[in-house]
Length: 402
Image 1 (spheres, rainbow, N blue to C red):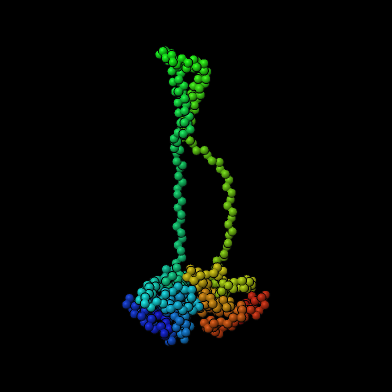
Image 2: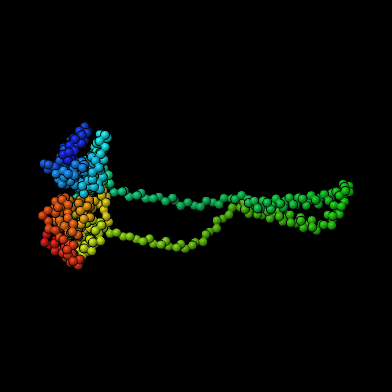
């Protein structure tokens, strides 16, 4: 179990400080610059890549970039930035540990040690062939999100029994008014009848008036009695429990169907082997798609990512398996492709698994030095110089001649 620290010559002091920190934790560490090559990585080894502005100009840069991609493919890479320099193409979108603040590097080395400890653990997710899903450790290839637990719906409950309502104010008001009016009329009538027997001659005129308006008093008494009866009936009705009235079922309008977007998963053919793996930059998709369709019409099976795989996602394992199962890898070369981290890693994987590499130029673009390293000794196909209708056939012929 060895931890290799790949660094530029100018970063030796930082590499040695990190080495001492790891050794205090009981790790076996080796420093390497690439000048004398690299020892093969074993299954329980890990690589720490120190990136700085000095490493960009290292004469062994291509060697340790390849070393880093080797470790990335096995999920054993930890990237550490000593300053704010950009990582090389192929490593830029991978997570890294920031060690640019020298005063806090001792604390940062502890974070690096923790990331290495994770890298040395057995991978939790492997493909059918036993290879670990690629990615840099420390936020790189997260395990696939577990299926969300089923949402438990509350059990249907019986509707509560209708509770008795209190008597409403309207019934009580009418009943009270009827009682008061009835009592007033009864008191007046009794007073009129009792007053003469008591010798209350002062009320003679009131008696005479009451006798003359007996009909009106009877009507008023009847109205008071009706009000009393109505108020009592209303109060009793409001106090009684009501049965819920069944609602009439209404036909619900069907919800408008959402526009369905179906994206076919970039799966290889049923036998697991495709003739061609297509490596391209996503910005070149409009040019690549008709070419791929034409190649398929000429009888070639094709594996192409049509979804835009992001660094560190679980799809990285699919990319590795697809390249291992493909017979050839077509690299759709352009200025955008030469700046693509995905294309750089896919070319590296094709070289690692000894796949036939066919560079197909969509435009007149000069490959940078690191791409030329992989294209060395390989016949280029300048497709941009071929008429569009003849391009699929030109690719088939280039594959046959390769």
